[in-house]
Image (cartoon, rainbow, N blue to C red):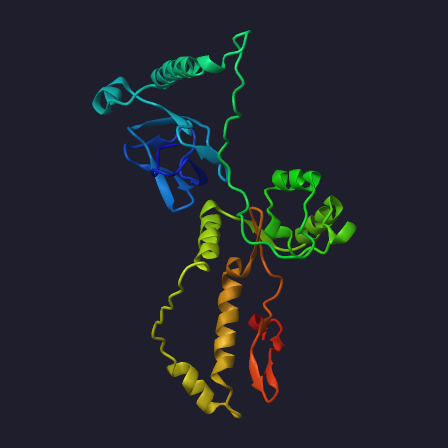
Length: 292
């Protein structure tokens, strides 16, 4: 996995464009990966034959991970200057030994009697749910057992803020969480990509900053012609409502709920419309707008 950006530590393979035994050319895009910023292509360094493919679609790999191996001729190695896997692993081993020696020298002050050291656990790159503001239902207190279960699932407090807890004082228990997850399994869903999680986080943070509105011109000639021929004439809001529902039906992720690393899609597109009345405002809900 190449270094795809200064702040990118891992990427998810979303498409494999090669197979074992296939021939590839230098600079050929063979694997498509997705980071939390963009979809990019991984290219080959030289001509060769794919001898081994270690990458799998849907799996995240950290920078430096070997995604596959090529059988390359001596002439191609001399022409491109690429290194063999053995040479790369030897360099890594030497670098690791030098790093260990440097770390040991830096930790002499903290050495124990038996020359052992207590090392911090390694950080494993992963993508989980985003820390967003929580609600006040049920999730105002989380027990250590509950938090451990949520960490296993990659779920944050905001994901369970709508659960009405059955524990003392309305607390959400592990059983409440498991019932909530079983309930979600019956809903259509899709795996949230790293980019989708990053977009969701950016949208959350945007509410703490000044907002800007962008307007685009839209030709409504056909809508106006249809409205002119109809009797009685429907309001323009109905056309906008219908177009909005059809757009959501074609892109259900836009109206989904981000629960952990999964986007739960709505079963139906029910849209409320604010209507002014004498005593204030009513919001009637139009059910299944995309199907009407």
